Length: 200
Image 1 (cartoon, rainbow, N blue to C red):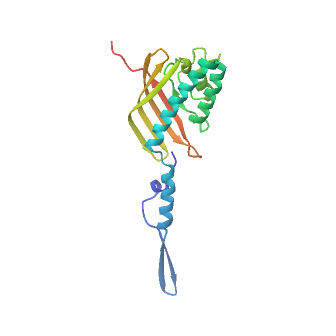
Image 2 (cartoon, helix red, strand yellow):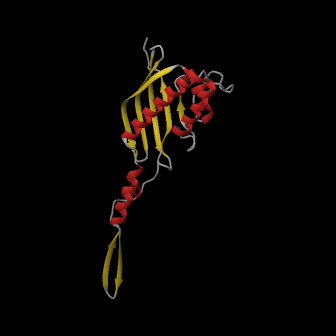
Image 3 (cartoon, rainbow, N blue to C red):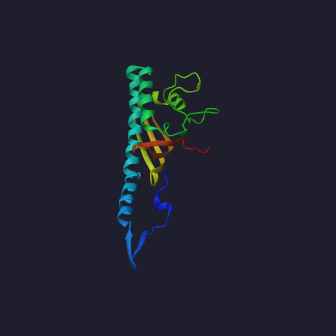
């Protein structure tokens, strides 16, 4: 999270007093501070951006899946690489990615390689991965319980519903964390997914 000036110092109007020939003149920087505040607001994440990112993720997953069905796993891998590079924040550092169907010692996928393997498999270093994005998905929808936003960071929690080509429905609990990069793109930096708890 970027440290904002407005958070680092009290909201005071700064003044410089210049004493010339016994006369004092005061100049404030209120106008400059107002312009800076407007620039900071441009970096803030909006609810609309979060919803757009969730919709784009769902559309990308379906695209990878249909690409696999129509053109094969190699084409799906290329498509998945593009999605990971544009949607996730591996260019910013480790991503806190805990996919739905993973087991120790590879439960968490903090690297791009691990994320790619989870989505499309084909990596002998991750022998348990069969490719979550290759399960013939045809629709995907996100429903939020709540969205938290603070400056250039946002987090959401809720459910994502997947439907495959045969009409089978899978619902997962999903938490996403987002941060804007230097170009203003919203990147996924946290992705936690699990199947809903079913008591005995």
